[in-house]
Image (cartoon, rainbow, N blue to C red; front, side, top):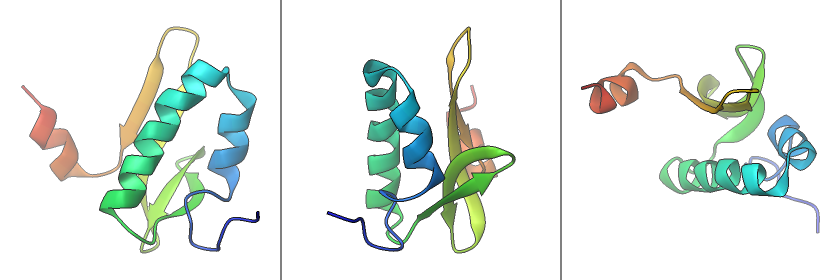
Length: 85
């Protein structure tokens, strides 16, 4: 089944996640699924050089595995402020 256009199921983020270890990909897929639920209409794209989600033409988030950690990069000051201690 081909994913619908405008779905977070199709694009560079899916391709990136397919390259990762299944356990790591599952963590990132949970984030993507939650974002898709909260922001219907998100699309996959490139955000700040990383595969990520775009909402209304603006970067929403990216995820990236590094040697040391799993990174989640929200591109919203409100999100960052809400979790700052």
